[in-house]
Image 1: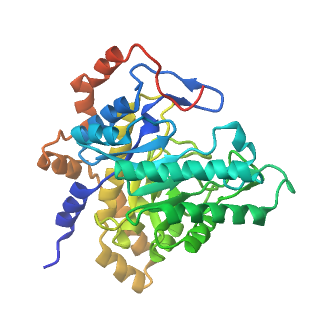
Image 2: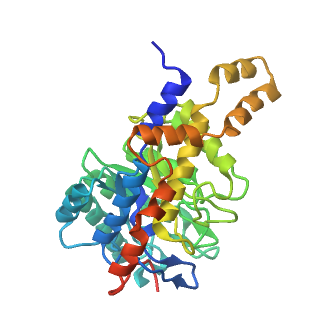
Length: 390
């Protein structure tokens, strides 16, 4: 017997999983200044505490992504056990091959073989960290690129990347996937070596089925139809997951859905249309944002709630009506079906889903009532706060 729309929506919303990033709990800022806040974690263990609080209140954030070396510890097995004791898992491992002087001309694409070797060794180290933590995802973003025409051989850089990724891919356990992210500009402004989903897709095709594209919703040129490329990647079985954030101009790393909630809904509508909201779809939902001004933990909760609201609206699309309108060529009727779902106030539905799970219907209000922010500001008054720059 087929589920009705409301029953299926509740089931999917209860089972939804959204991974939070460790770096979003630390101090962050712009190229010009990293802004310090009170209560920021001083160790990866305290980042896990914050992630556990987010999961406790939302019920859908049971893992935290790590960034290496920012989150390096002596014993990753012990870190994984600490997380498990607090009800969460260690998720995607994110290598850092962009913050050392050696990487000025690139990492795996660098013309210097010694620098390439250093970068590949770090990627391999992250594979081993993934083994120790039980992670199933190696999430790779490369800052490699050039600023001037003729600075380097574009094709040679693609070849170097392919060789490096091949070595890493072949070292990964069968349980691990490599997700290759892209960014169309910044830090380089003539070429980025992985500037778009097509380049990522091409590299992944050469590697194998466990190499997939990672879509960061802030990494596109203005006007890019993100839901279109998501559909193509889903059709080809190469959509590995998302780094959800929001942008007004470029890579703004704002709260998910803050700038364009309709775009977030459209993306999730296409994901739902492909059946990829089901828990076993293999599409990873991860956040990647830097809360420069707002407090870290409540900002993370708000982003999760925004993803949940867009998901709920996508689940309420009347697909039978939509299909009929599309087949009959009823352009405005088909559009109206989407707009009806997008205009639905799904907050009561989500409140009911949370109550059914034993959660407070308003996670943000629960956070502010609970006193956690005040407690961490007092307890973390000393020591060096973690962050991604000076």
